Each structure stands twice: as C-alpha cells, then as structure tokens.
Image 1 (cartoon, helix red, strand yellow):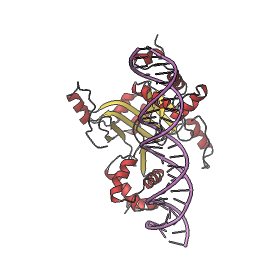
Image 2 (cartoon, rainbow over the protein chains, first blue to last red):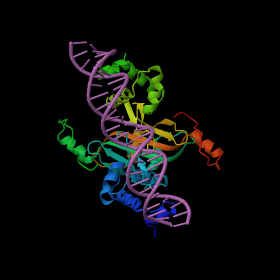
Image 3 (cartoon, rainbow over the protein chains, first blue to last red):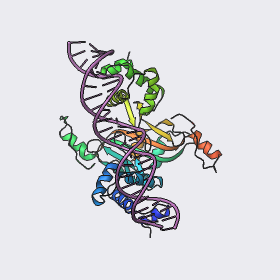
Image 4 (cartoon, rainbow over the protein chains, first blue to last red):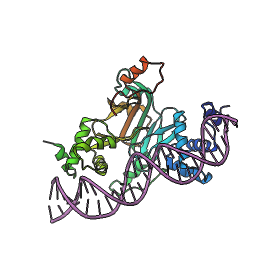
Length: 152
Length: 152
DNA sequence: CTTCATGCAAATAATTTGCAGTAAG
DNA sequence: CTTACTGCAAATTATTTGCATGAAG
C-alpha cells in the first residue's frame, strides 16, 4: 500500500516525525498559515523549531505535496496538493473554504495569449461566507466591527 | 475635468507629490512590488521614505485606487484598480501580464455556496509566457536555469 | 488654521542561513 | 555508514509604529 511514508521516500524525502505530523495536520485542517501550523504542532512536539516548519513546507512544496496559496491582504497559507479547486475567503470571519471548479471553463473564460503554458491556476474569491453574509443582513444598519464566526 | 488630484481629494486624500508620482508610476508599469516602486521613485525624490510608500499604498488600497495582488511564491504586487482582469505570471522571466476575462463565466465555473457574497475575484495563472515557452521548446533538452527575458 | 502626510529612527515581525548534532534509509 | 533533517542562534529582510516637522486644503 501507499503510505505517506512511502510517498515521501519515493521522492527522496525522509519520513521524519515532524514531516508526518505536519502532513497529518494539513489533512485535518485544510488551510493553515506558518504560525498556525507551528502553534498546532508545538504542544505535541515541544522541541519543534520554526525553521523546521519553514524547511519542510518548502521541501514539500517543491516535491508537489504541498501548495502555497497566496491570499491578497493576508498571510500565505498552505494546503495539501489535491485536485484543482477554487477558494472562498471570508473577509469577516477569515474562513477559507474550498470550491469545486471546472478548470476548463475558467481557462476558457480568460483571454490567454497564444503559446502560453499554464502550470497552475489560482482562483480566489473574497467576500462573505454564507454565514457571515446572513449575519450582516440581520443587523444591516449596524456598521460595528464584526466578531469572528469561524476558525482562522 | 476629473484629474487624479480631484479623485484623491474627493475621497479625503491629499494630493501630495509622493502620491501623484506613485500613481503615475503604476500607470506606466502595470504591476510592481513595494521595493520596485521605491527603487523607481527614489532617484527623482531622494527624500522619499519607504514608510511613505507603505502608507500610501495602504491608504490608496483602502480607498480602492490601488489593488494588492498576491502571487503565490512571490512578493505582493500593486496595481491601479481597473476593470476585472486575470493575470498570467511567467515563472521563467517573472513578467506579469493582464488578461481580459469574462467574470460571469469564471464565477459560474465555480461551485459557490448559496448565500455567499463575492466582493473580489482573483484569477492568476502561472506558467510560461509565450516568449519563454517558445525559448523553452527551442532548447528543450537543456535543463539549465534560464535567464531573464523580461522585466521584474 | 487644522488636519493629514512625510520622513526618520526605532521597534516588531517574518524569513533565511550556518552549523553541530542526530536520526532515517 | 551516509546523507538528509532538526533545532538553535544569529543574520537578513519586511513591515509597522511613534513622533516632530512640514504641507495641503
């Protein structure tokens, strides 16, 4: 069978506990910033160093295990590489959710120049998630700064 | 008529020389990082401070004059807010070019959840621009690190 | 005049590097 | 055994803040 360990080994990366727990964490939580990753892992691995997190994320990105997602205005986040999908970032609660996407249709909606090669596509929507959008409607006249409603 | 100065004033921003030259620069060069902006402006305004560039970019973004574009793997870049468009980032030469895009088609290609509100969409393709793609083909067996072919 | 913007210096945050010790294959 | 990985400290790089001066409206 194809364990995470085997996958790592097969592309020349050693399966260290730090790496395995990092991958495991990303499997559970979809999108995390460097700091969030560090904060999650630290309690169970007190000796973990932040530079190891940096090292591993960059090693894993190079090998294609992990994808770095840049969101304008926020910190970079990292996710496990999976099938292509879009992201919806909620400006109110900070949640990021994955959206199924028909990549061919996205590509055909853009006027790509003849001869360009596309290796990667990022489609990110920013706005309000359904939960926050509804809350916003409820107290529509109130311009107060809104509290968080989901995870960061 | 509606000069840049008037536009700034009409939303409560003073039209300082620093701001005007920043806007002017972004009009010429489409997408620039903070450092590139600073390096461009500094020679003609030796007293310009980097924190003024930060301040202005953030003031101008808040008022919607400027858009911050996050590109995974690179530094953030800034551009003047214009009609919606996609970006093609060339991994080889670093150039960024604007692509016309049919936003409705992009949105309909994604499975957006019921009730979400979309305030902004970012569609970024990464790969090779036509020029670099062609060069790559020409010397296809050569895996050498490629030189730059356009501006950064 | 009054408020906002600039520029400087200093503080803080983010990321990278060098290296000795350690563990994975 | 050998090579790659970890963790630490230090170095860089990036961004933010506080404040006095100066300019725009």
